[in-house]
Amino acid sequence: MPDRDYDVVVIGAGPAGLAAACRAAESGRRVALLDDNPHPGGQIWRAAAGKPPKEAARWLAAAERHAVEFIPGACVFDVPEPRRIAVEMFDAECRLGYGSLILATGARERFLPFPGWTLPNVVGAGGLQALAKSGLPVAGKRIVIAGSGPLLLAVARYLRTHGAQVPLVAEQAPLSALLRFGVQLARHPAKLLQAMAFFGSRYLTSCWPVSAQGSERLESVTLRRGARTWTEPCDYLACGFGLIPNLELAELVGCRTWEGGVHVDEYQQTSVEGVYAVGEATGIGGVELSIVEGEIAGYAAGGNTARATALFPARQQHRRFAAALDTAFALRDELRTLPQPGTLVCRCEDVAMERVRACASWREAKLHTRCGMGPCQGRVCGGAIEFLLGWQTESVRPPVFPARIGSIAH
Amino acid sequence: MPDSLTLSVNGAPITVPAGATVSAAIALAGVTLYRRSVTGEPRAPLCGMGICFECSVTIDGRAHCRSCQVVCQPGMEVRTDA
Image 1: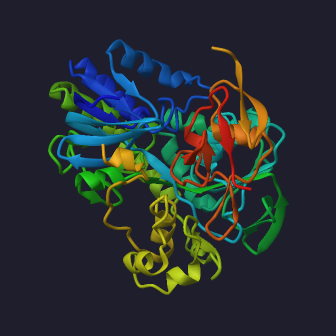
Image 2: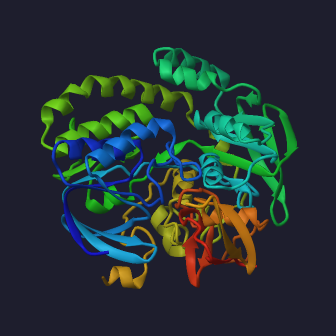
């Protein structure tokens, strides 16, 4: 693919990135929209069998109408010079120049280590949904869902609709916190409808997995709730402890982060001029907040500040919801005792908890144990260690994704 | 576009719905081990979204491809670790 220049490059084609690309293109800018995935939609609007969900249709149509250039399967691995990104595809590589950059890099699941969590068929909650949407068969499978957050319910509903048995959903947060959150939900009718659409499976609060068993793959999961501990046989354990923003690219560009998200001004511009951040990358807030942030940044990058400003009140309303979500699903202290001394924390380099604990910092753990030095570059163990030991990961370096020598030398 | 296509997983042909990823094709072929870790443990997809690299396999001779991010093509040759 040849090197090219655009007025606006948007990285991430989820709700925030799609909205940003559409609004910038509608304002007359030449826009490229990149995503690492083969289809647009991000995680929440992930296409099932190549077909996007209806909520995404409006934005996909607008993107086409305004000639947004969609580049799928594009992994951005470096920013080799100001206003230029390095991109790798399955069988090509290129450099793209931009006037404005909009980072809509979304979030990933937070995984916490417990004995047996590395077995095949222990999967993320959103992870299993993503795999099912891309063709992994779940019909007739017995699937235990565990972890934390409203995503667990959405995943339960999706898997049951597609023929899976979901005997129970284990939510680590206490019922009291969820009831307070329910009161907040009542002010957000769309969210309340989403929550109410879930019926059927047992939904156990203050409940979490303590171990997974199996030889070459998962056979059962052991759960704890109060004084009770029991084992459930299952084909899959779908387990995620909330979401964490993908900040690697923002950090590589030099954007300041604050309280776990990219710090932005009222127009969603980061501390780096001409670079915007939208959606979950600025802090976990859900799809409605992501869309409105994307629209604001798209209009701002398109020079359409009046349109951007008009959306500030809507954004404020959705931010209140995000704050309520954060409080309700805060992770409990007991989860810090899940990993045993021999439990692997870093799955790329197979580093056990006792070796990480013997270090004083993330940096020391990297140097002495290779924790976080494998292909995922700490994306999995970093989120766990941040919660377990309170360490912040530090200093991203290019390439932020493993890249071919040919792509780096391009 | 046809509704399905055929590729091979560890030398055995498997027919999958159009649009399926290589991760899905491997599961449809009944294979649960995608790769062995550095100490030889069996591993399979974790994140489903291109972050964790646990689903890495060899596709058409190219090693370390994230199978969850690659859409199946007719005739593709996929190899997992054994």
